[in-house]
View 1 (tube, rainbow, N blue to C red):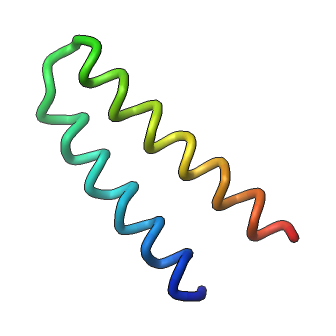
View 2 (view 1 turned 180 degrees about the horizontal axis):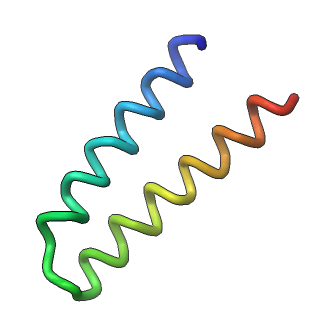
Length: 48
């Protein structure tokens, strides 16, 4: 795992924490969308 991948995983973990503490509203959805986007892009990068 390189530095970029480690950083992305760190961001995902932080977003997941914020998502868990947020109420079920648009803010929570935005955090989840960001985490999922980063996770998806990271998987795409790992395949290359």
